[in-house]
Amino acid sequence: MPLHAKKLGSLTIGNNSTKLKCNYETAFPEAMLKAKEMGGNLLKITKVDSPTFISSCYRFRADVLLIDDNTQFAADQADFVKWLGCQIPDDTSHFALVYVYMLPNKQDIYGNYMVHSDVGNIGRVSDNTKYVLKVYKEGKLRLWAFTEKKGELYLDIHSGQSYYIKCLAKPGSVTGVPGFELMPIEKGELEYNSIKE
Image 1 (cartoon, rainbow, N blue to C red):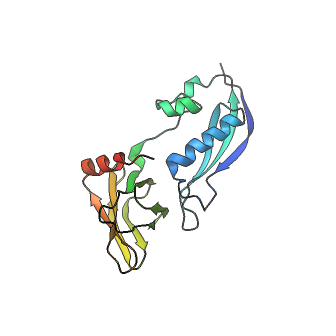
Image 2: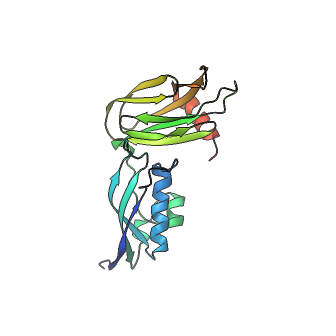
Image 3: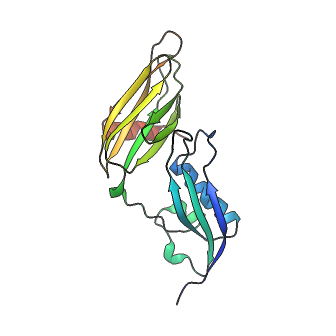
C-alpha cells in the first residue's frame, strides 16, 4: 500500500554562528525536535552543510512530513526512536570521525581556545569539553589553534576510521599555549567518554 505523505513545511537548523555547541550530534536532535513540534512524524533531510570558517555549526535543511505509518523508517538508535522514529543512514565507511576533547588541566594552566580545521571550526575547548567531527574527504587534515602561539596537528584521514585528539594547554607568558596529541584509540575513547556533557 503506498504511503500518503503530507508536507507540513521546511526547517533550517544550525545557522547561528555564535553557538559553541552546534556539532552534528547536537544540531540533528534539534532539527528532529523542531519537526515534532510542527506535528510531523518524519524528517526528510534535503541538505547538510558542514562547518565553515564563518560558522562552526552544522546546518540542516529538511522537509517536515506527516505520513500514515512511519514504522518502516524506525531507526535502531533508541534516541532517534524516542524523537521521531525516522531512518538516518549512518554508513561509517563514507567518513571518518575526529574526536576532539580537553580534560581538566591538573597544572593550573589556563587553556581556552577555538580549534580550527581545514573543513571549518570545530569548537572552543576548555576544561571538560568535547566535540566530534565527521570528515568526508580522505587525505591530510590540519587542526590548529592560536593564543600567544600557534599549535597545530596534521592527520592522515581514512574513511571508516576514528581519531582521538587530546587538546593541551602548555605554559605561556600570559595564557596557555595550544597543543594537540593524537591518542591511541582505546585510551582516547576512554578519556573522551569520561567527559560528561
